[in-house]
Image (cartoon, rainbow, N blue to C red):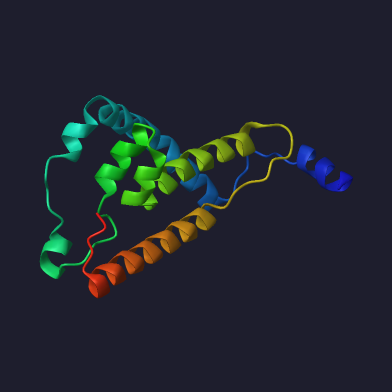
Length: 151
């Protein structure tokens, strides 16, 4: 353990893998947009959630798409109703918290002098794909077999 720490202190931690550095830079570039949308939804989120646009996938097939409920979920999330947000679309709160967690983790990994574990962005992406798949399957199976509309 001591050798690992010495290696981490000696090694220049500002050098990151290319794909890791690319994802970090993308997150930094998107930060003003994410904060602006969050502030916009805090100020007038109820108006934006009630615009009444219909999902074209649902209109054509009668099934839920992977994004159904996303606007309402984001509105509930920024107003700190996390459970309601999770109910409408579990990908939205996961993506929001995973984004900020990854950004913080990458920042600390890149700028701290001590050895700090880096988090692979692909792990977070695979978890998101799992959430999308399970949510899509469960919602549509319930709709298909029982006729109950969840959202």
